[in-house]
Picture 1 (cartoon, rainbow, N blue to C red):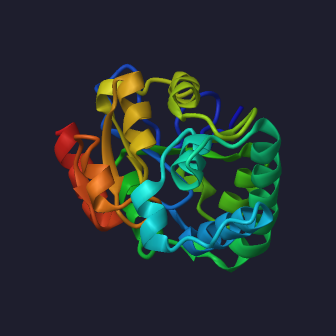
Picture 2 (cartoon, one colour):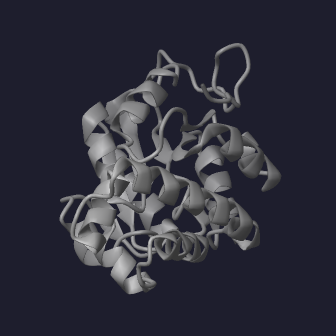
Length: 237
């Protein structure tokens, strides 16, 4: 699983695994590096319409969003969706998302932030719950793949937590200790996944959650990715 930006098992920026690691960021993709919240809302409302539910606003989405995704639907429906409803809604969501996300782009300032982190002798990777085979060409299409030592998307069923995926992702990063790693994402689940592997987390308000719901995770919450990188530098020391 994943693509590796280095050669011969080493990181592309020449980091010596035996030395004290300069610091690593694991980036989330959807809602963090990739500003796709409009596509997410459109696809969510298309899925809701399939079972006769009213559209949801961005504010309401951010207030209620959680993982596993069926629990999010439970908050809206007053009950968990049946297995048949979940499979149908999930299929509709992804079909509409594929149609809408082509109009989305990277979050403002991403290219400069990625370049600056790499040029400072640090490493970074992507761990996303977006389908792996769809994620790779998307990252590549933006011309930023060279900034990452590894890019992993989700394999297996949708709807679960990122924690186990994060454990596999970090295990695939040669010489990157969890103690020198910061996960930057837009969801409480990113903080849960970071804690699961012993890493730090910084949460960004530009994606799926409200500031209030992110604050409940007990980690730093920021309003821009520039602030997120600055906070990562502070946490790593």
